[in-house]
Amino acid sequence: MTLETTFFNHTFANPFMNASGVHCMTIAELEELANSKAGAYITKSCTINERSGNPEPRYYDVPLGSINSMGLPNLGFKYYLDYALNVEQQSDGQPLFFSIAGMSAAENLEMLMMIENSDFQGITELNLSCPNVPGKPQLAYDFDATLELLKQVFAHFTKPLGIKLPPYFDLAHFDQMAEILNQFPLTYVNSINSIGNGLYIDPQSETVVIKPKEGFGGLGGEYVKPTALANVRAFYTRLKPEIKIIGTGGIRNGQDAFEHLLCGATMLQIGTELHKEGPQIFNRITKELESIMTEKGYQSIDEFRGKLKTL
Image (tube, rainbow, N blue to C red; front, side, top):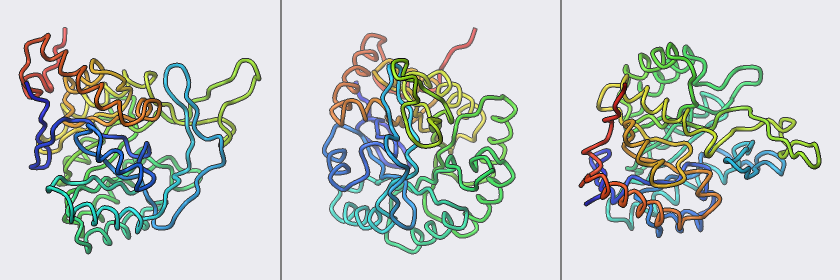
């Protein structure tokens, strides 16, 4: 029985990671992930300059998950790149995942070129599911803008690159986005980011629970698992095989992880539940996944990955 997962020519002890944005703001938090049972980990989505983010409260745990409008708080590109380069010098060759989320296409391209010209050998994640231009949808909901940005990116960027996507809700949109993504040498697609612009109300005080955007925020956790599974499955069945899927959304236990893998995910990221439990979740969830696989008679993840049955 093994949970070993091969991704980008590397073998990880298990498929579990943190979702960027959770428990990865500071070097101290990143080191806790490095010393946990997670198979891999990723840095906080960064901008070129440090950002304090939106006013608090901006994250709130709710019974079926979470709602947040963080505003990309981060300590700046150089902080995370310096950490990543230091880790690579000391590591056993495990690639670190490095997340960027510029406030504009130009900022994303600038950061990618700094990565291209650096000694960083890991995997970069470009977050396309952040709103950039007021009055415009987040980039990945603008198919023409996504295509244009990826053309510009791959005209110059040669290192391994994955992209983080928001959820899609229409089969035609899965088809359209997959047609775009299949044109490029992507390492992976990470699906999904939070479901945007939910609203949660405290019934006692009759108020919203987060301050930014008059209470509107991204939903995570149990709420989003069916949407996440659908997006993982939709892209697994539409993207060329060399583009792997990282499944994110609603993973709270081994059964949730098993379902993401069954839909075709290769790696798995945990956000809301990691925020609630801390890095010890990786110890629990690996044991739960092993138990399910033992019960079903699977010796490895490859025996069932992507083999979801339909009626």
